[in-house]
Amino acid sequence: MDKTKGKLTEYWDNLLFGHLPAHANLDKVGEEVKEHYLFVRLMWMRFIIPLVAFYLVMGLVFRINIFGALFLSLLVFIYSNILPDADILIKKTPEGKSESLWYEIFFLLCFAPIVVYYVFHGKAKPLFSNTFKPFHGLKAALVWAIFLFILGSLFWPDFLLKSLMLPIFGFVGYLFHLVVDDVIKLFSFRGKK
Image (cartoon, rainbow, N blue to C red; front, side, top):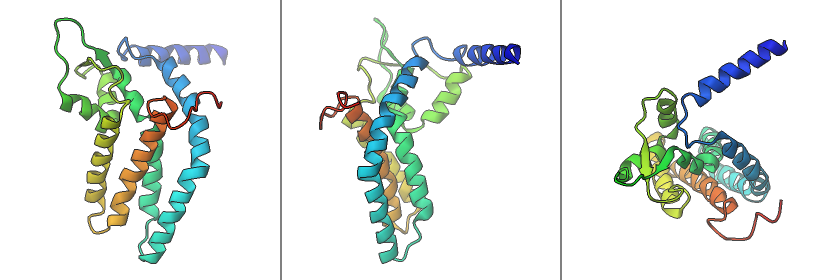
C-alpha cells in the first residue's frame, strides 16, 4: 500500500508540477487558504448569514424563488475569496519585453478556470505585468463585480434581485481577500489569528 501511495504521489507531483510555470508556487496557495479560512469563517457569521437572511426575506416579499441564485451566489463568494491569488500566473515583465495587454490580464481574472486548464496543458501564452500582484486591488475587484453583474443579468434578465446577488456576493468575497492580505486596511486582521 505504501509503494502504491508513493507512486501515486510521484505521478501526481510530476503531472502537476510538470505543467505549472516556474513562478507558480503551490506552497504559497496552501498558506493562503489557511490564512483566509479563519477570516472567512468569522465573516460568514457576521456578514454572509445576515445577507442571506436579507435575500430570503426579499424573495418572500417579492414572491421570487431565489434559492438557486442564492446557492450560486454562495459558491461565487467562496470562489471570489481565492480568485485574487490567480495572479501567481502573471510573471514580472522582463527587460526588453512589453507588458501583456490589459484585456489579456483581465481575461485571466474573469475566466481563471479556463486559463488554468490551458496552463496545465502548456497551451497558455505567458502573461507579464509590471504591477506587483495586479489582482490585489480595488480596480480588479470592480472589474470582477461588473463581470458578475453582466453574468447575473444574462442568467436572470427579468429579476433584478437575482442578478444583483452575484456581483454583491462576488465583490464581498473579493474584498474579504483584500482585507486579509492588508490591501484594504479596515482593521488589522493579521494580529488576530
